[in-house]
Image: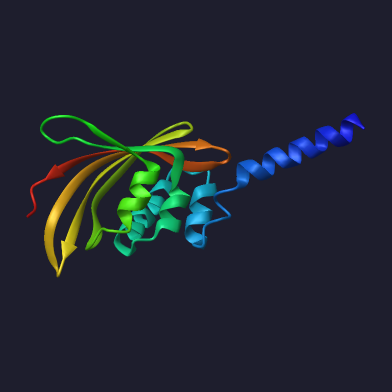
Length: 155
């Protein structure tokens, strides 16, 4: 009896931990979320921008952790927004999002991704941002837990 209860709890725990990656429609994202190699973060970053450009809440939801927070660094204060706010905002955005630069640095079960992306409307760059993203590996998958943005001059 004890063995079967223990086995059930283990299976139930593994099932709960694995939720999230399987919910993603994109096979590329599912593979990248599960990939142990920190280089998979590059794929997730590209998919993140694709989610922004196409207003794809489901894709963004796969990448962002439940406790995700994004902060902007304007000249005055740091403004923080949670995952729910980001998912609501993405529906209203316009323009493309293009990755100009990306570098990653791995720290065991964490990865810091830094880069620059630009937003275009009608083929014209309307804004550019420098970002720092923090991904951690938990529940046997990568999750974006934090992003900090700083606006750059549009070229």
